[in-house]
Image 1 (cartoon, rainbow, N blue to C red):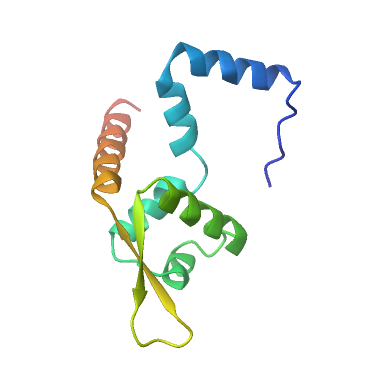
Image 2: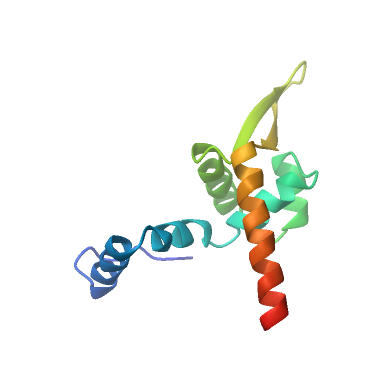
Length: 117
């Protein structure tokens, strides 16, 4: 489990310097969080419910999975859809246009990495 970085650490200072130097560093730090892009990709490829995503990644904790799904939702990369007439209420996730655009970039980055590794 990741630990919080102390506000007084040089790590925090370095991250602030990098963020001021280039917005890309902030974006990479955000999308580079463990599991995040894998979950987005998984939702885009038919794993639309929490339990289905969990089956794809059985070693991820429910807490981290919930946190990453929540982040994807807050960033408007996915939407939540309530499944009608279900008790308890079931939630289905769908990737937004913004999320699909990001996935295209990630897949292109993956292709580039495969080519040059």
